[in-house]
Amino acid sequence: MASIFTRIIKGEIPSYKVAEDENYYAFLDINPLAKGHTLVVPKKEVDYIFDLDDETLSGMMVFAKRVARKIKEATGCRKVAVVVLGLEVPHAHIHLIPMNNENDVDFHRAKLQLSPEEFKEIAARLSL
Ligand code: AMP
Image (cartoon, rainbow, N blue to C red; front, top):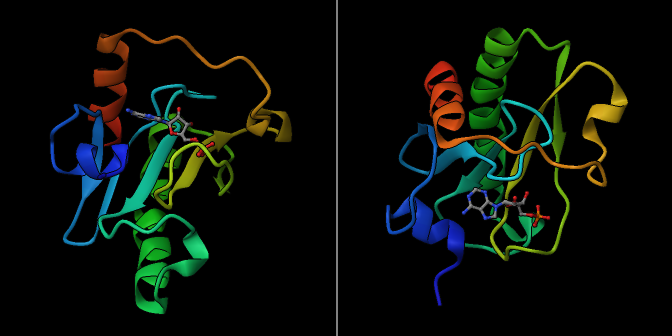
């Protein structure tokens, strides 16, 4: 069965898209740690990031760099954290999280509750 992220990429499940190219897709995390928390995924469905072939893995980081630059510019954060963790979705993904101090990237913290309008507005600001 296709992963939830493959279904998002195909448009079967809605998402707040930030960027897309032939091989990668970036969209807002629905349970964000901060406004602008974005997921970057390869269109190729592979569970574990280090099982990706070298070209897809390196291309994913270059794509993420473009997205992160935009997040930094749009949010004014000090840096954008790059996090790979979690076992929830079996489709490799990178979390990009606007960060002003290290506590901003604590996944045990309560997530933000944003309205659809807020998600849309953030996605529009981050859109490449
Ligand atoms: P993890 O595997 O721990 O990195 O968790 C997967 C991440 O995907 C979590 O941060 C979820 O909030 C996020 N997520 C799961 N489903 C969706 C969805 N439909 N749209 C956006 N983000 C999602």
